[in-house]
Image 1 (cartoon, rainbow over the protein chains, first blue to last red):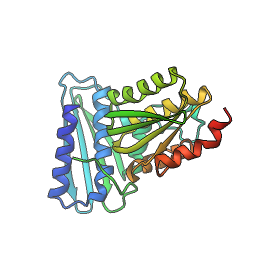
Image 2: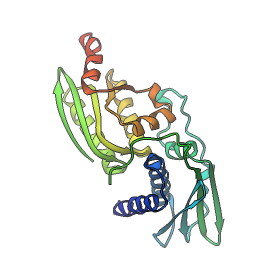
Image 3: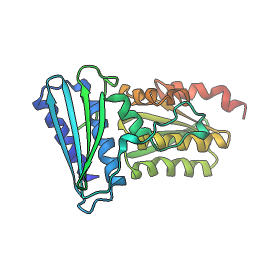
Image 4: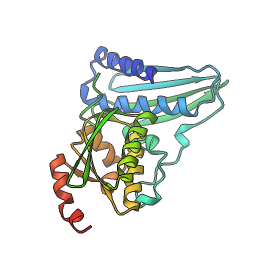
Length: 136
Length: 118
C-alpha cells in the first residue's frame, strides 16, 4: 500500500495545480483508489506497474489507468452490485465498481497489444459526494 | 487503521482511526468483533469519527461483521460517520441496512430497549 500513498499525493498535486475544488476530492480519490486497487488485485501483469494519468479538459476531469503486459480484463463489464437484496444475500464484491459508476460520467476500457486502459471522465462541479476527503 | 474499544452496559464501542481501505484494515475490524463476540459481547457501536476515508473493501468488511452479529441475534450500529463516508453508504443503499447515529451516545441510547429484552 506504500504505492497508494504516492498515488494520493499525485492526486492532491493535480487538484491543486488545476484549481479543482476540494469538494471534488473525495470522489476523485475514491475513483482512483478503487480502480488502482482492483487492477493490482486482478491484474496478471508481468510488469508489476500501473501508469496513472490525470488531466483536465475544460470542465471535465479525465482519469486514465494503464496496465501493461496483461490479459484482457474489462472491469467496465463487471455487473452492478445488487443493492436491493437482503443483507444475508448481498455479495461483498462488486461494490467498488458500482460506486465508481455512480460517481463518473464516462467509464470505458480499451485493450490492445497486451495493454489495458481504463478511462474515466467526470464532469466537475456535479459531484454526488461533496464533502470530506482523505486527510493528507 | 488503528482501533480501540470499551464496553459500556454490555455494548462494545469500537473506535476506528485512519483510512479503512485494505485487507489489514479489514482484519482490524473482524478480529476485534470475533474476539469480543467470543467473550459474549454481541452488541456493537462502531465509532467512525476517526475514519477519514473508506473504500469498498471497508464497506464490505462492515457488512460482513454486521451479518456475523445478526446471525447470533446481535447488531452493529455506526456512529459519527463523516459526510463522504455516509454518502458511500447512501449510494450502495447500505443506509437501509445499517443504523446510523450522529454520536456514539445516541447509538448506545438506541440500544437501550433492545439489550434490556435479552
